[in-house]
Image 1 (cartoon, each protein chain N blue to C red):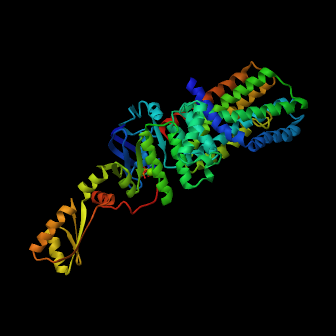
Image 2: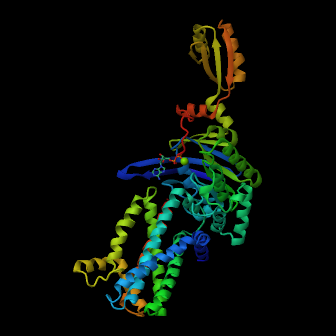
Image 3: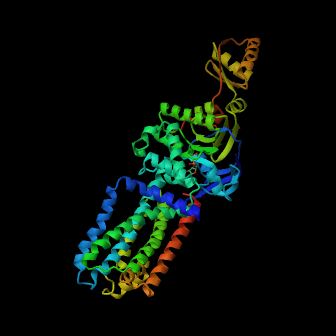
Length: 314
Length: 247
Ligand SMILES: Nc1ncnc2c1ncn2[C@@H]1O[C@H](COP(=O)(O)OP(=O)(O)O)[C@@H](O)[C@H]1O
Ligand SMILES: [Mg+2]
């Protein structure tokens, strides 16, 4: 559904300065997948999406989206995809219902069909009573649902969403997600969405692509990434700091007071082994705990930085 | 071609619907030129000879400038808000995006023109049908070009819009005055007439005045038509290029 090779975008700023927003991305997304494009602010997520949706010509590299080349056949790509941008899709001067009808017409639907689809979308996203209102009078969650409705009017097989849940309260976020997942069940739409919320990528996506500083640094299911790149966290405590130091040396971990932290590909398998090793060496263990890693651990392993530190949309 | 027409209608309908739903704003737009017409028209009476024949086309050219310029302001709003991006991801014909927006302004201009002419008739305005129809057609071509240029300017000045406001404020009024829309240039000093000769709007104004006096064939109309077509071609070329390069 999406294939890119060496996709690159460089922005020129004033005084001959340039920003390499996206640096040679190779992507492959198969039909029907729900892919989360995860990365900190400024990583290049929106820029990538804008290239894939023909909004921005790539500086170099190629991208095929829904079987069409974005540079050679942008109109072909546009007819086959839907896009929910990072900002709001509806114009402030227009009524909600009117914008939905316009959107259908933009995709070449007849007036009657566009009106029918608009009604359908209002229904699908629980926006029915808001048709005659202007976007300015809607809540954040309602506006976001309207954005999604606008992206779906023509029933695209592939939908791009740029930070669909950013800036919403937890209840609205949950609602947006239930709509996104229902959409997927009903129409089998391929979904490619960006987020900087770790939990979302972790719990919702079948595939996670992690981008940092314009480069893709990891691809896989959340489980694979966690197993391969982070491993489970094992925390042991001993009665004395001396024991902790010896345990850390024996098992290859790090000691801090009476606490020893280490990583293991599979903690459930590693822990009994570790305990036997320590017992044989005469180290007394007080407590043992294992924790599954999060995608933040993956990001930390890969970049040395934590993703959850920044929470501002950009 | 058929998709171009269909998409132009789509964009036009989108732009026109809010005005249609809340016609109060439309009423105000109608009132403004009338105010000009009667305030200045009364003053000019006698000063330039056939004053209504001279003044009505001037007022129409002025409105043809302000309408598309105002459209640029909405483009800026939509660029910042995100709705422009949404429209650009649809297969909507790019030229239709530019033309459809201006067509809404042109529809308003058309209504204003009819209103002004009807009101000016009893005051001594002579109606030359072919001239008036040709004059309005010329203004539409010119307006399409201006609308596209104002679109480009809006894109270039997003997100803060400083460039847009500067250009429209600083450029528009001197250009209007130097075109002889409101005051005749003939009686001014030489440098004023030279500056007027460099101003494309002057040729549009002269052509409109000739047409509204019934002189359909002649050099002023030829120059005016050439200017309008050139502005439209330039505007649509730059507009399409801007859309292709991404906003
Ligand atoms: N139009 C632009 N002009 C200049 N720089 C830009 C532009 N758009 C984005 N950038 C820069 O490119 C980088 C990536 O931005 P973006 O793709 O928006 O990141 P993300 O969506 O992951 O937060 C940032 O450093 C940003 O400042
Ligand atoms: Mg972004």
